[in-house]
Length: 197
Image (cartoon, rainbow, N blue to C red; front, side):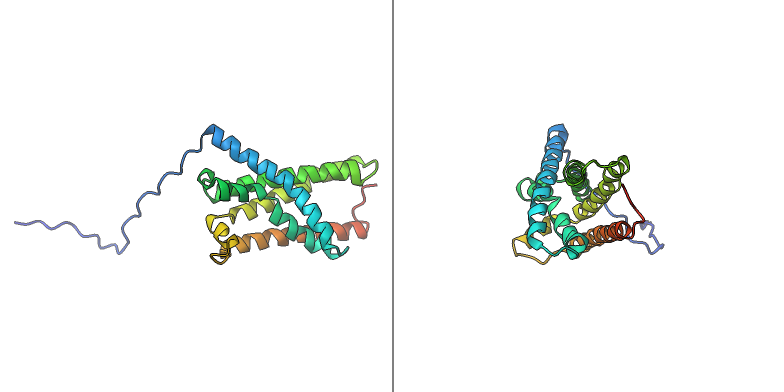
């Protein structure tokens, strides 16, 4: 008597194989990626300053111009890693976290400039504000942009492929959040609802 293997009549597809484990970065590789991301956030602020200065337009610059320029430039270190050392990138969450660190660096430098250069004798409330909400904003928006920094973005930059839709959508979402925040902050300041004097 020949026995036939039992058939699975559940109609379900066979289970997928386990995903390949992520490469191990090691402490030096991790430190290097973090350092490049932080330096990128530092240099990104200078690029944003130049770009915003050249863009002009007093009303639309803080509302729309600054978010477009800043969100593109804050993760410059992550772009560099993706082009120069792609093997050090562990995936989308990794690029998101690295870009978030770059955004935090950008936000800290911006806050320091505001409280030490732009505003004479800032109040404690203004200092607290500059070192809280804007830092959360820059970190969160940069994290979103970083989730969209994938290998095919490099191909797009080289003119080889179209920009991936997910990368485009994440960038647009970050710009929209940033622009909404800037618009609300400006309206609250103009109407006197928020006054740090």
